[in-house]
Every structure is written in structure tokens, then in C-alpha cells.
Image (cartoon, rainbow, N blue to C red; front, side, top):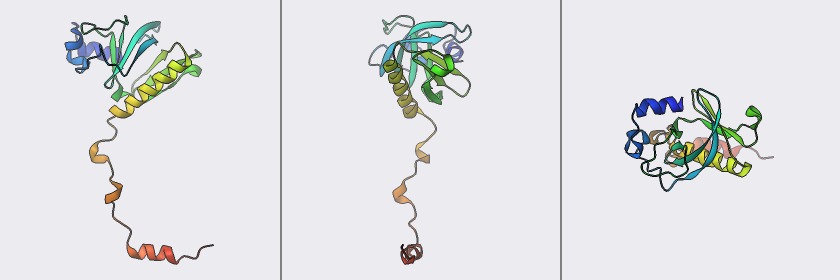
Length: 163
């Protein structure tokens, strides 16, 4: 799904960093996290090693670790569409595996080591929270501006015997 979404947004031509599909993200420098992961293909479920870059709420992947302004991502996942990221060794029966779930699909990845797996899970999880649309500013509750309990309620609480 992420790859087909990417292709739909990108169309048949690939314009790299200047393309609106990248969201204006300068993925070629200052990544929040970057490194090799093995990713399961979308249609043919083969495993391919790709260079991943997490930046500004988007997880990009490339064939080559040398990412420049002219690089064209092989795909991108907007983390705001993701619900969970968690370990998946038991699901795949593979060491260092984790999964990233959206409402419509679950994508699987394999890191090179346990520490890397945990770092990717933490980085992606933090990005999901930062870029989530589940809470808008209008929905944030200001607890200091809540109505205070009436004096009568306070009086009844104070008059109850303590044991």
C-alpha cells in the first residue's frame, strides 16, 4: 500500500527532492535516523535490504546509502498514517524483526541487531506521536480552567469520618 500510494502520488515520472510527494522534506541531510533495514516487498514478498531515512514524519527508503538532493526514494511512509510500531520476531520467526501498522496494512522490517531494532522502534514511535493527527489543539484539555467543585461538595468530603 505505501509503495502504491507513493507511485500514485509520484506518477510515472520521478523528480526527486523537488517533487511534492516528498513533502518538501530535505531527506538528503539531517535525518532523525538513517540506516540499513531489510524490508519485505509489497507485492512479491521477497526481502530486500534498503537504506532508510526517517525525517519530519516520513520514512523514506532508497537502494543506495549515498542520498543526495537528486536521489529518488524507492518509497515513503507518512508516519502520521501509522498506528503502531512493535517487535515482530514471533510473527515472522526472525531475529530483530519489527512491524509498522497502518489502518490498511502491516509492513515488516528486519534490523541487523537487537539494539538497532529497538532504536528504530523508538525513533519511529516518537515520530508517530509527534505527527499524529489523533489530537488536535482544539481537543487538548486545559485542566486549570475546569470548573471547580462546589463548596458544598468539599464540605461533605470533609465531614466524612476517617478510619
